[in-house]
Length: 452
Image 1: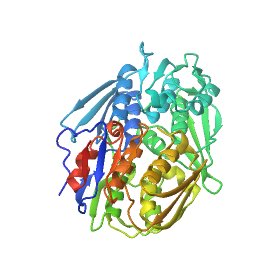
Image 2: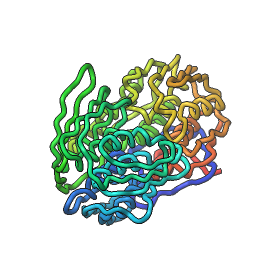
Image 3: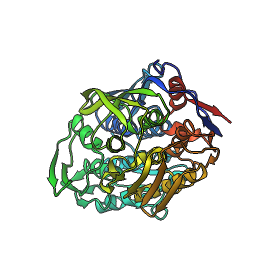
Image 4: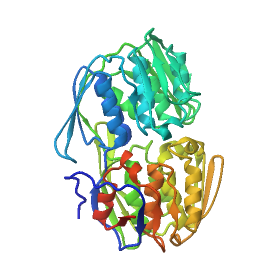
């Protein structure tokens, strides 16, 4: 069986519940990687000529970025049916938009576009939904101000008015925390700065921006630093060159059907075309340490990124200690890891998680509340989460408050597929921000997820 993507996705809103069914079987294509989708639109809009993007994630967050690129003066058009569409981006000199750029719930979109707007030496106002308005923007605004941009904000939060009409100067910046969004904003701003910007990355985080900048013809230099860091240098004034982009499958989204296969007896699932960049594969490294039957098949390189088909079969898992150094490579996967840990034999300890407190929700608090309500043994601290698994499924039977967080919603629906009683979430609408095909894909593999 292959999950079909030939028709528009079936979306669910409001309360949704998942209940135990038979084993999951089959193959499905992973949805396009969200991080790379955002970057391909932004760099295409900055590049003279036409950039053709296939495999773009057509989720709410990415569509907000596409709309923002139109608002800044680029041409963005979509051709072809759902699942086979090609997006054509015609780059143009960016202009200060009359209306605010509304990014909905997209933290990646808003932070990267702030850097690109500064580099384009224009002015723009940024807005978002109630969740995005609560997320910190100061970590991006501070280095942009160092470079010469002026920003008016609400105590480091949206709405933000950013102006760089006076030009930017190159800076030397050390990242205070491992954040690909902050690093990317600085690199995009540096394209329009005078001189050479040097970014010190003490701990490696996602490198999609660096890889894609090089694909678009930008020269970067990178040198190792210490045990696991590096320096990145980029000269301002470089002109990007349009190119074709094939977006690989998102490993964070692929984690949900893979996790379901691991905890539902007799399941055997393959998710095709998944990005396996080492800086995004921390979850899969952890799952193998837990004893998961996971294999990377048909490995290849596409557009400079490693890709594989990931096969997962039902497994007996054991608790492990996840090192804090691994957090940057799996920061979005801790909610689903916690669900898996609740099924494992023994304790799983996760540390270095302070970033989870300022995601779409306080993910540590949401995971703890959801697991506890459904019979899990869980505790937390400011930057850690501990789950004691009993080697069996959760009891289930409770409703989980998602706090408008798509990853919390999908994680607990996966939990419900193996639990003794169904697990319900209070609202499924936000799943469309990252994984609009979630319900269709899971149903095609055999999952029982219903509205109400």
